Length: 219
Length: 219
Figure 1 (cartoon, rainbow over the protein chains, first blue to last red):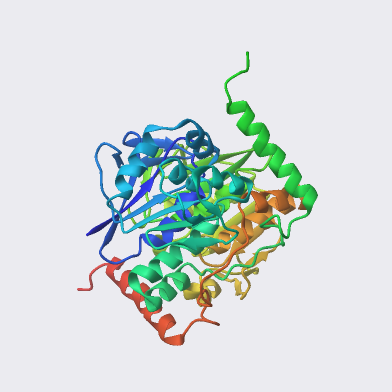
Figure 2 (cartoon, each protein chain N blue to C red; figure 1 turned 30 degrees about the vertical axis):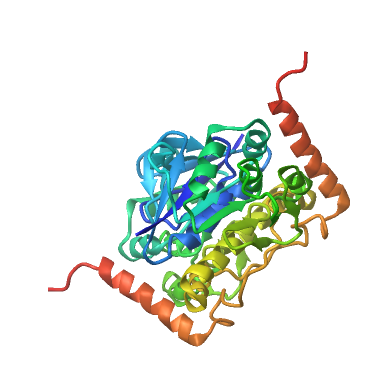
């Protein structure tokens, strides 16, 4: 059995992890491990608890690594974190190291994106360059060893791409049918290129405020 | 605070719950409760454990009820189950009772869909009629009090619709932008109307086999 390691951390955007998991868990001959700083419940950004079945001290290799995002991922990528050291170490063992949303910034801080094209949530796109990556406005960027997806729901598109790479077109088509992934977004508001600029400015401001709340108080 | 109750049960298709949760959890003045037969960890269809923060004995009313699906939901809808009795009781208190995927069959067994148009995962569409519903080939069917979504990923489209109903178009557009829900499915394989018929037959056979494995051994 090959291992798919899905990282969890407090404040994770849970759909970043679960969208891809729903597809990746169906890969034949692969098993999924949810990995936390410690084994046990990990709270997402809105209070749901998911159970990490092992800790970063229990697992030092994986075939596929998936790093989800969230505001906490931005913060960790700016300050450094034990989880980022773990990502860098496990990356040396993987066939595919992947991120969803701001998980890309954790890959970046781990030194994994240097010299590569990459994507992340639209809010943080420019910040990829701080890690030596080339911000690329695509929903999924596959460089071979490293695959990055744009924000949150883009992880579903990425995972179907990974399933196709690993198990072929027929299998991936079956997984997509199982998930009835025939999306019909109610509006054209999923990216700043199509959203009302006033909505984009409003959401950007919410993120700015949330990150400032996390920052140490200035003295 | 209004309550959004998300039902969990062993074998749940986790994306049915988490796709909508990622949008619904952002509704102002609403809090999400994850409700299990008992409080504590509940395993999904592939081994992930989510924590139900309360049991069906702790909560008898909700403003929004969300019932996810899975093969286990099909089985419970055929045999009856304590959770279905609970759904029927809570439905009498809700503004919106909603289902994703085969969760619709649990609503059906609870008597909630009688006389209504409804949808579910493509595999079970015809079975809606057993509960007095009119199977309707739309991704989201909103009858006012009751809203049903098609399979798995359709819950995301449904949740954005619910967010718009509850909090308005501007707010829903912001949530969609937050989730970067600008889907780019890798293939046209998300519904039998577009999938290769051989793929559809293969996936249908997998479901048939899985349900037969769940059936009591014939004597």
